[in-house]
Image (tube, rainbow, N blue to C red; front, side):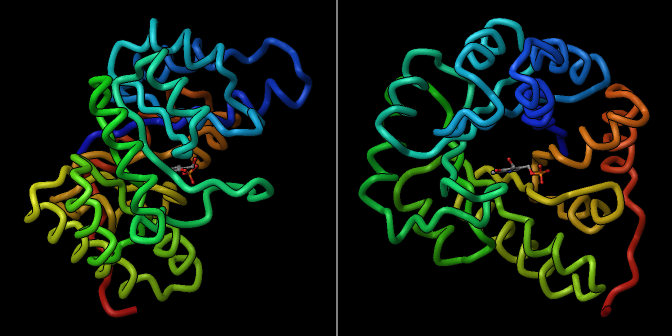
Length: 245
Ligand code: PXP
């Protein structure tokens, strides 16, 4: 299972002062030196953290692979076709949300998502779709010929706080198995941290995790390289969790 680090919050710190530091490009280099196997950024419509300039420079400097999360809008498709990141993850976006709130409803927005997937694949950009652990949503991703999905682990992360994480973990494991059976590449992410990572890290079908907030938060205290290494170590050696809570 690979670790892709979402470095949005490096840009969040920079944008707090509308200045030029810290630079997400420098952060990406440090993450990769510490063992990250991918770099993820979310280019939001409101540009609250990552800027177009960051994506352009990261495309030239990231040595592993660059995954750009974006909404399937005309503006974002044009940017993706110009910058050509290695991968785009299609996500839902609501203006005043604090962070992505749930998976994309690919059935509701089927036409638009299909168009975006085709435009990206035609531009030779790999495509992943962020979806909730729902078999119907995953089947529809397959129908739209998305090669990859990222399963939303947000509900599992929320449930973890109350101890009732087991049913949510089971949903993710079942969804991951179904997706793999359909031939989809399976990623996961959202809300994962140093405490709740263990359950997810035991799901063999998941090839990559996208983790942002918890790594950057820890990095602010112990440094970016230590924070990335610690997470990569936990992913390699997940602690077995007691079942049935
Ligand atoms: N995956 C997707 C699709 C996301 O939108 C985000 C947040 O930008 C993440 C993963 C990372 O979530 P977190 O910052 O909670 O680790």
